[in-house]
Image (tube, rainbow, N blue to C red; front, side, top):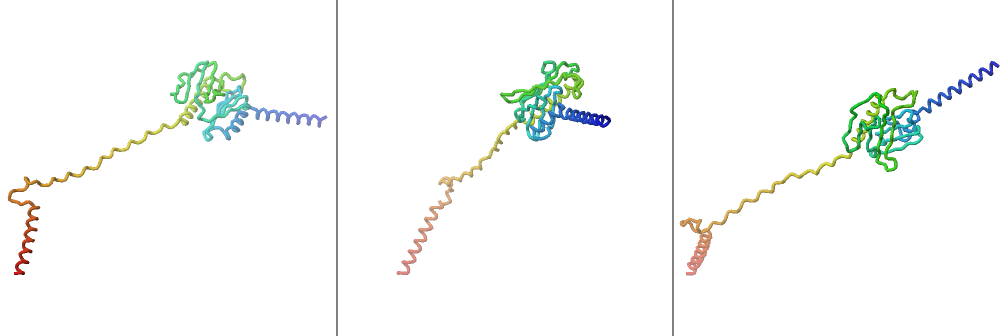
Length: 234
């Protein structure tokens, strides 16, 4: 009987340990974390989990992807960061803050501490699955990992909204630079005009025309040569 009692105690302890290990392994945030690591190809840079709802979102900047998961990670969708259009934070059914691509961010002006509901909505450029809702507050009763106040949930959601805005700025298309305007090149200076040839009016009366002087000199030289030849014949 003593041996049987010891065996029963050991079996019960083993079963209890196995049940505790399974419960630890099957916790919501761990299941979602495993799903995110699987679809993102590594640990995410940051994640946000809707505790008690089995939903979450995470992104990886190194791999340029964002993933959403529901049903405790049993279902996941993966988008490129370029497909993230924006996000909005709703408090008590009213949009309190938003950040969308191509728009100025609408910051969160008030942070009520006694909000009845808080949700974060992500919008994607996908016709089949255009958005994804994360109901962050209220959590189910007696949930150990859920935030204790609505103010803490709003603070986490607003921080995640700022991350979305940073991702949108990071993925914004670069503005093309205008083509440089070539500097005006001054045309080369025109050559100075050639002076006109001197006219007869510009030559003083006491100076002979240079052309006529050359002709006279040529005639004189011919006359001298002829005269010299006649003297030798005589």
